[in-house]
Image 1: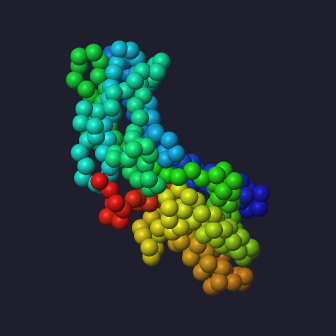
Image 2: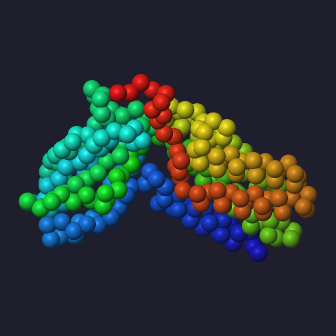
Image 3: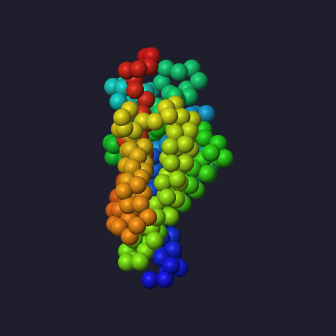
Length: 277
């Protein structure tokens, strides 16, 4: 198989994994449709936001629709706050309401803090309808990350996936030379997953590492698993002919862990370790 074709296939596999990561996971927006005032509306409810300002829930809804938002701290055994909800204010075609962290004067959420919130809409004197059918939306707050850190991290992890897939495809060739792909994948995974990744984690959620052995963050853990797999392939396989089977195994392992949704079991504020009301 020609090397140019292998690179094309590697790019396609990598793009597919990137799209999957972008569209899945517990922090991706929750989208849906609902019937309101005789019209079908589409909504997009965010599940991740920066904590530098009050996040505002927004739903595009036709007049004369009204609504309110209720929320509570996730896993804190709170009651809905406020009890009667925050009225949504109309701004043109959109209903808007802020999410303020309970019991904080400025209302700003701590890093890794989560709120469960519900959006209730109604038309004139109708009974309010929970937009998500009684299942709260979970919002996780994070600190801001500068683009000059975030963009290199994304780029390096993308390149790591690309060299991993290319190495796996190279391993399918009987005469394939896989050593250089294993080496580059290990280097890129180390830079992206163990230098830039922890820096982003610290800025976003206040912790350098929340995977094994310190926690259960699957994003950290799957990076660790992929790195170990490729390190074994590099060291055990060496540069000889037998190395291609180690590289193929590492490539398959990396594809499997990368198809675990991003941010699953991610950083979460532990209320037992902070002073809260």
